[in-house]
Image (cartoon, rainbow, N blue to C red):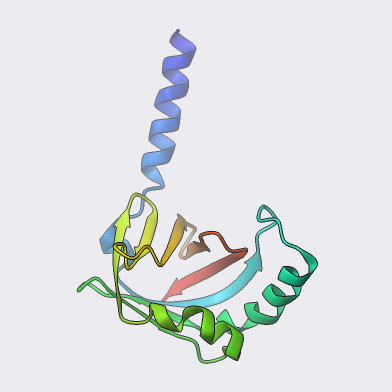
Length: 136
């Protein structure tokens, strides 16, 4: 029983220490690197599309405004990528735990956030895209 309590305490402390607050994510974030998650299964066609689209995220800016409006700029985006994300621009956003929900009432997109040293990792939910973001 003692070991279970110690394990529970450790998990709680680690989870809490990794929590992201609104104050930490307010602002403009620029994508410096992108990778494809190995945990999302993809067909060969999906992998080809993901490879085609992923470079369009490099240099993109995600603004998480204090007014809870999400803005996205994609200067290097291909037409395929623009078609996938342009409808997210100027939508409301909400933070719950480590998940940002874009337009929570419409459930348009979720971004799972993980802290790094001086950067954040944005995992675009139900996609293979993992973005390394730095605050501007």
